[in-house]
Image (cartoon, rainbow, N blue to C red):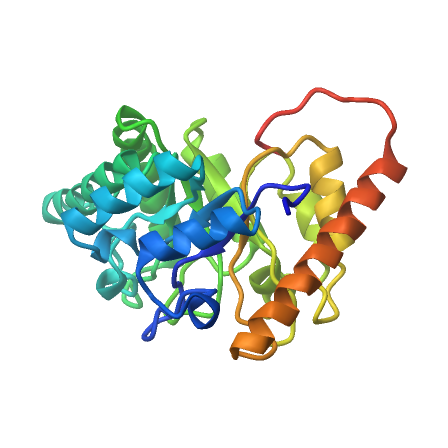
Length: 297
């Protein structure tokens, strides 16, 4: 049974366990098995943010499985997990720029193999430098690295948050400001409903503030980063607004389950189908005439 929208199932996003979304149901953490399951339940793709941690053999097997199932691969983080808290994106020294380029090139190579077109950017702060100077330096690095990413068919997407320590970009306003400062078409914003609910509060206000810059949506309910429909966030309203404004990209389901058991995964999957039906109804009721679509909103 297919969904009406282009959702992705994650293959593990939360350190240190990196537990895949349907590992209890599948009874495996093998990405090929999980890709096959995502295809069976009607997902449009998978989300493997830390894909660069995998061996070349495993990445090649994943690429083959994605090709066989017709599934897409969502964004891959541009810097390895162990370097996320390091101020790589704000370092303009020759050594810093060389290190950043190496990480981005490696991530872009993996992304190209998996046919992913987006590298996620999490900008850590240097506590010994002024925030304004760091933003200017990060914008310059984003401009340069977006050219490198484009050579691999990818764009950069900033994800602001406070869930990880030492982040320089902590809310949608910060993200919009640095995208404008970077001043290039190769840099956008990842809009994660859980992060935004914590950092910005009202989702719809934040959506409007980021309009024109959003290149990726991650739909999660709160509290506890649980499946859509299990919490209290107005994500049907938000997703409807995004879709009717022209968003056609993947929609990452980057969440835990309300109950992390085989039965809980099945209940959560049914909740996702109900959520998807509500979104489809809301989209139909909002507009009855087709409108031009783009992936960015």
